[in-house]
Length: 452
Image (cartoon, rainbow, N blue to C red; front, side, top):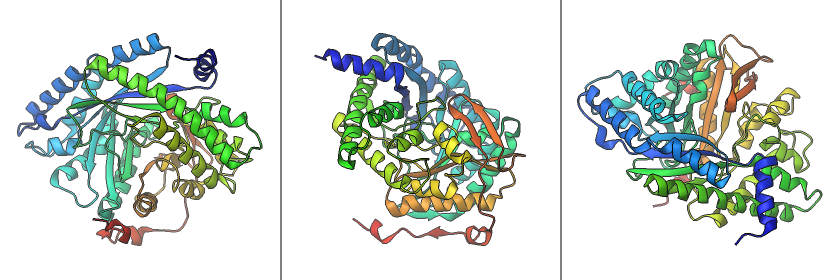
């Protein structure tokens, strides 16, 4: 039984503090769709995706109306396509991307993730085919998202893949030049990728997952900020406890939605991802939450410590609220999607180097940052290498989603609209890393990976 105070408090979270279910994502296993004939494989994929998810959007909207909880996005993730397409007698995987796009449009979801490959220790022929197709696939489809895992703590960093991804990112930006490099907003490279992540662009259905599953991603930086604003000047223990209790409440709400959706769609409930995913809306910012703790501007000295506290407290509250916390879970710091981050870049308190330091303690990594269009593929690869090295050494997920904006230079902006927002063009280091990233091979796993 809920008290009147709890009901009023929850209502305020939705109406005034931007709380929402950011996504209900159905993961679908496509392993039984593999076929030596690529046309048959694509038909199997289309039929299976549309069959399993035909009621996903409708039920998501019904749950939103009945519970009074905003459910912003309904999405699909599938088994990494490189695994499925590798069985087919073709090297051109564009038809698989087109099939995913058509299926997503048919059922009405806004994104489908899984045009993906796992190459952290080596690259198969199927992986090569998929990676080479990414720029054209993201340019020719509307709803397909792509992800590549290039490193793990157990295997080290596949620098051949890192170097290639520098070129793929650059080419993807060029092929979507008319949209400010929008294709790169649908492409992410990972270290230690989670296989149950409901958030795009990194979502795919892990090979150890069930036939189908429902994963839920919640958002709530505005709720956390409001809680922090109510306790000015308190000590850090009180601050952490307040954030933890608030995260507990929103996690319980998220699991209710996930369990309800799973029941109605007749698939198992997987995980709830309790990440604080900001939006371009005012009052829905991780940066502003950090500033509410006492920082004049996000990026100043103390920002990494504040983010570490926030991330840890959110995880602890989520773990209290559900036994099925997974995915990424914590705080996202995507520049284009966070008004406070944008302002911090504009006023000079936040740059790529500080963002990189913050990724040591946040949920993901360098996310939705725009750099000049003339940034070289080698520099992009070096930025990726730095980011995944943080993940490998610290045994956490890190990632890079970067947009080398065609024709744009420092001080200008890319404009994507919607949840993707806009991003100021940030400078990169003027010195070259080319000889380093061209060495090739694999950076060995760290010594602490030997835990068997």
